[in-house]
Amino acid sequence: MIRFLSLFILAPLGCLVPGIQGAAPKPNVLLILTDNQSYFELGCHGHPHVKTPRIDAFAREGVDFVNFHAPPFCSPSRAAMLTGRYAMRAGIHNTIGGVSILHRDEKTIGDHLQKAGYRTGVLGKWHLGYSYPYLPQWRGFDEVFVHGGGGIGQLEDYFGNSHLDATFLHNGEFEASKGFSTDVLFGQAMKFIEENREQPFFCYVTTPATHRPWQAHPEAAKRIEARGEEHSRNDLALYSMIENIDENVGRILDQLDQLDLAERTLVILATDQGTRRQRVHQDLAYDEYHQVFCMMRYPEFTDKNAHRSTALCGMVDVTPTILDLCGVPPETELDGRSLLPLLRGEKRWSDDRSLIVQCPRGRERARWANATVKTQRWRYLEGAKLFDMDKDPGQKEDVAAAHPEVVAQLGEIYDRFWTSLPPAEQLRSYHLLGHEEAPEVRLNAMDWYLGQSPWHQLHMPKFSGNGTWPVEVARAGRYRFELRYHPREAPRALGAAAASIKVGEQSAKTALEKGAESAVFELDLKEGRYDLDTALTPDEGSRHENPWGALFVYVRRVESQAGE
Image 1: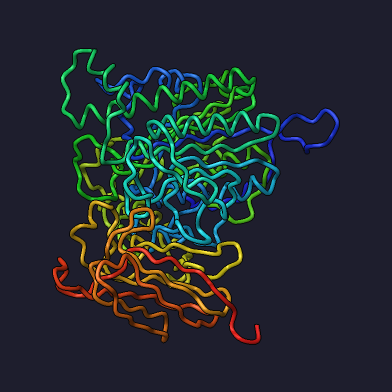
Image 2: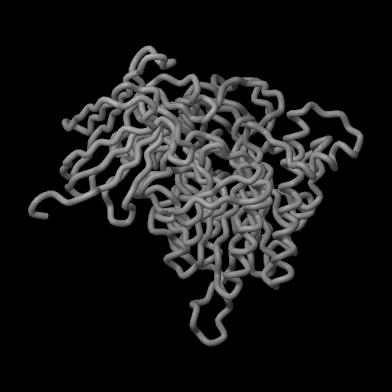
């Protein structure tokens, strides 16, 4: 019988309580996640051009999970990885539009480990919310060095960023860097490890490479060109980004050796999603959209048990694995399971475990939309198609009619998952205004939950849409709203003759001087949840024909209401 597994991690393994005489130190964790890198874009997985000698060696030293699956887009994949729970439980089923934000009630691996005494750091891409209380400094991370959005140069990123000399958000303040993004982030990670070598740490390095648009790493591109191979400009940029990642993986692994930390550090290397080979299927429910690389090394286990594992695993298994190794019980029920048995040498699960992968790729979730239920042998897609992976790994022949009992079993697994989800409106992520921990909040239009949602700075010159933010006023008082089309770091004229704002039933409108860069309003608001809407009315010569929305709003509570 196929069973749905929703597990608690029960028993700490190999971790003694700190402070006891002679107690072994807690394991460290280094989690490296690349962005949109195909399973096949590694030398050890057969790519004919990319050279990744350090990653290839790492794969041989640990367990290379070759049947490992993730939701097919960034935010859902990262939510599953960092919580050990299916992303739709956190209200995440797209990368924009208000449904790419990790719900405030979810606990991350950072929360768990920070509470257990670990120093925690995230360096690179976050893509799970960029306002209060969704940024990583409020999600269990002590050291935060991140860019905005799902890729360098997206709308919520620092304006004008590219992979060279990007500006990052460092512990709440923008900070300019020097060099290529991957080099900078691994440099920051190595600094974090050096500073925390005497205590247990969790270091999460998450590169914006290899997300589009691709940008060549100068030195790596020259080295590839010197090999004499002919590549398109795009391929050269992509391959250089991958080979630069490989170099940096080698740098940080060498550092662990030099600091005598390698023996007690779990190292995980994975990518969040993305297959760029020619696709056979257009449907997001197929394996070719879900299979990602994931490799793990923990010398105590893998020195004797290095192998390629064909056991069915997925992103939801990362957090349970880390918690199990570190002896930290989760505070919530998890959908994943610990991979430590496989690291210790088991080849397959002792039972027929199941995984659900679903990303509706829109604001509204829907039953069976882009969904698949996976077991070691079977794939049941969208409540209709069944594939036998033992006989048909390319998923070409639908055998649902021949196996009604399997269809019924897998359908029941999905139904239990679907009915366990809270109502969609309960999972909406509201931007919290006026909280003491965040005196000012910057809202951006990637998070509009109604209307259009621009997602890249390149869209701004032609964008003319509008949308709505869901906000929650934490404390009653007077609030200052600064409406902009460009963020503060790139001031430009609005091109508007007038502006208006509406927060719940409160509204205001003002005329603007020619060349005004912003429109400022103050409103008295009570505690509660509201829709926030803005409108800019075009002036003479504006490219807009109709009112459009402010893409950025800066909100600050300026004074309390009378009697407070």
